[in-house]
Image (cartoon, rainbow, N blue to C red; front, side, top):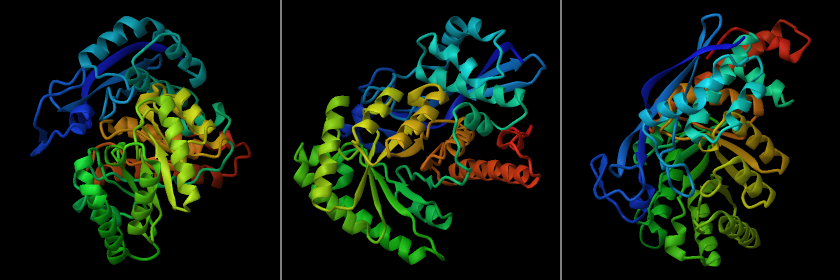
Length: 423
């Protein structure tokens, strides 16, 4: 099966792009806007609506498969690609990619994905086109995208549900109740994206964690034992500089406040560059271990590409690595990143951004299930409900199809996963 034509449709992401530099320097919320002047290239304001471009591959039997471009919420920060408008993205597709796609055979994702490695494209475009190419391979072979991922990347594990991390955005209290009701396995992300949110000497964060732990205990039903997960966006560096002993002692207080629940902390510190981040997180982990402080560190800042993820994993710089899918470009790189984490004994968190779309979120579920990631982000948006619905329901659909095909006693694992059902 071949690509006959490519069509594009302008759209929006499910959240917003925020200027991380301006927020880190104290920009204040004014309702849902941020007051002040943007500091990062591509931003006309500190908060702007996320944009997306849907890229449709018209196959030679008339079927059209779609993928959506996406840039992360904090585009242009910590070494990430700068923002592009949907007009700029479409122009790049037409000028740099269109001729390489039309006429291309799509039966194998690995073979068709090679076109994305032949030219230097913005990561957001590679992300969108690769989604469509993975769907095209699945359609041409009459199976789910997850089956293509398992077969072509040699994953052997049986499929099971991947635990989901829900994210609350700025609604750190009301959205927690939604997460408890819907039994999110990890919560609430927290969005502590500037030092002021931590409070004086971090007391605000400690009080929040204590409230959160008590809230779960008081509202949970049955055997619900989630993990508490907060993203600090490197803000402990603002409080403690590079004093790892003070930083570790504070994280010990945080673990106590979160008790009896396990505590995961994403990007506790920002050491300013990739090499410094690897070294700093290695030293912080060693300090935590020496003090028997039960906190799991998650890498995100300065860990943006497949090469970065491999380097962080090999260095054992962290307990968990967020694979922020749009930052890696092709979904093939996200698949390879999960494998790289597993090879080094590091937990793989298949993440992304609130600024993605329903299509990209649903497709990422197939990657997570086939590769058996350890954690998956509920995305897109920050309202909890829609994100848990999109990611959670797609997981259940994939597993239901797999169970049905297993029940029909096909001998070959790839054959039994064949179905024309497309998410």
